Length: 487
Image (cartoon, rainbow, N blue to C red):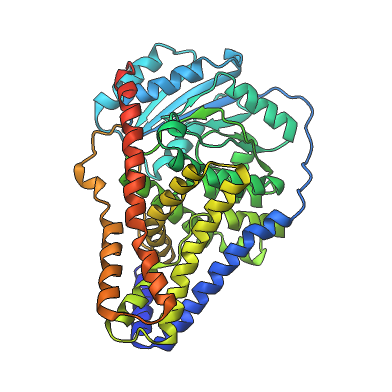
């Protein structure tokens, strides 16, 4: 890890001192960006893959796993109440709550008491010193499943599922014949209080997951997924090797020859991150974890060394790179070249073009989705602002993963108690805005490409202000109900 960081830093310094080397790096980045941008329309043009076909009717016995860590007790209990109210036969499923590394008894004891009131329906496990974050917790839950279990279901601690969730899951498994199915993530009250943020998050499912469904190679997204117990065991269970244990397991399942389908039905709703700061942390984990997964399984994806077909490799690549942003290196190089009087070089123009290409990718993805689904212009604008505001964190996450920085699993705060006024200042985006403004004033670049690139670097700050305002409205709309939730 240290060697990769040192090597990357050395190459960056040399690229600053030697513009031809910097130009080569920018050219490589531009090539990768164009290839990833071309991947989506390429997949869209492919004919839909024929499904493997429904299997003979079979009994499904579900083990529902709810992994928790320092969650608000009322939130977890609301999740458990919804699971208890399923219209699936009570003798046909169990619920396992696996609380890991929560030191404060005030957070896990109320959940334990609730579970003890339903001893025949819920099993509560509390463990300390669990390694592997959520993956470690889910593996412990796997060790405690009922022998009758045919499928494992994961539900996040803040998700309230529909009463017919398990019935729909069984129907989807029977209809598709899949080894695992993934339902979309959705958020309570988001379409009213923060529709742009909701639309930005939904874009992944409406594009990447939907197209991966054709190849039966949908990657898991952590909650509302239903996995064959046999397939999960054959793949080796969950792994904490990356911070997106769900996507990483999905790659192994696909390579093992198992089929995964995306079921575009809203069967449960959770909570949006309560501030832009929390949304950035979530996006950082998703982007960096998927980059880790891509590196970990690069041989399978890029060389075909495993059993993956070309179609599956392409849709897996599309899903793992959904939030990639490669603009950090060109930004650094452009800043240094402008400050050292090299802003007139071809290398600086290439760096500016790479930055603009990154923005074009964001705009094209959001506008294409908005046009295809007929979203109102206001919602598309807010979704575009959200994706733009998150771009700096995506860029940092991509680089951190590629150079081997140590990454840790970050649990999204769902209480609102940790919020501080400083979280609404959007420091990273403000730094970009100030830096671009100063570079415009000090270096006065003549190249229209560089001028446009510096203007693009100013956009994340106003986008962050708009997105932060939406999330404050969302927070104000959901917090009263959360405080009233009985523990």
